[in-house]
Amino acid sequence: MELSISSRLLNTSSAAAVTALLKSKPRVHHRHTSIPLLPLKHPFSPLTLKQMSNNSQSTLSCSSLPQNNTPPAPSSPSTASGRIGEVKRVTKETNVWVKINLDGTGVANSSTSIPFLDHMLDQLASHGLFDVHVKATGDIHIDDHHTNEDVALALGTALLQSLGDRKGINRFGDFSAPLDEALIHVSLDLSGRPHLSYDLNIPTARVGTYDTQLAGKNSHHIVEATFKAFARALRQATEYDPRRLGTIPSSKGVLSRS
Image (tube, rainbow, N blue to C red; front, side, top):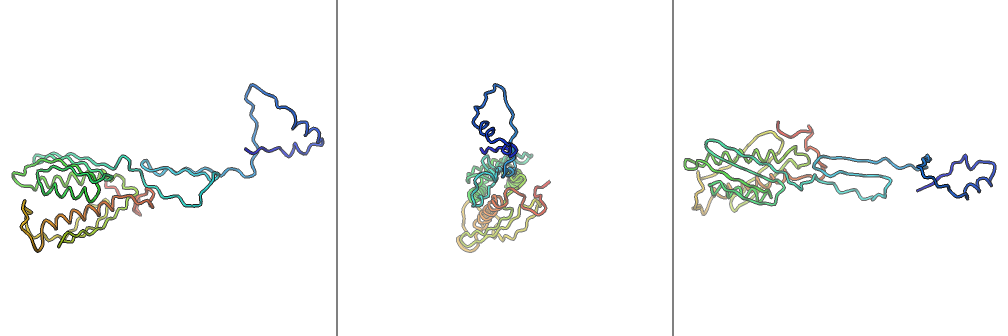
């Protein structure tokens, strides 16, 4: 603490009076005494407090404290609890429950009664590092179509929930996945505008329980590589960009679907 003596006190005509005043013993009072503080020659700099978002870390700085010349590392929004979406879809044809955690570790727990669909959902979890839980029952005695479709609808809705306001994400994802003779490229934009363009030439109508395609274009490989490429591209797009500091990755400032 820096103490200052008023110049008006030092300009008194009697130096002895000043000396006596400085050597005098302070009196002790049992009540609070308010002593006005004089302005310091170098006042403290203003305090800066920046609150980025509910899910992000706060930055506190005060230039009066010792400062490091090294720029602070950018912080990403906290994902301690994970970005989670959960959807239940029930129709006359199917009963589907989906839960996805974008900040997971690749846990896959899927049971759709369609083995190949379960295998593809495992690829989505493993290569995207998402936790994917899917439970589905449907009229597969008629066809797999209804269960496939409703699992996709529920998964898409859960993904929409888990993305939230999309602050700080990369938004764009692009990945190419090879699998033997198959090479699949996926490019996506989590803009909030629904759109799908695809050009997949799958040579067979079904991928059976036993793979008889030992050469040429393998339908299993094409479909599996598609899921792998999609998972990696989606992982890129949903991960946080630390340089954005929790802001919306759009010049419009809005990405969420209404």
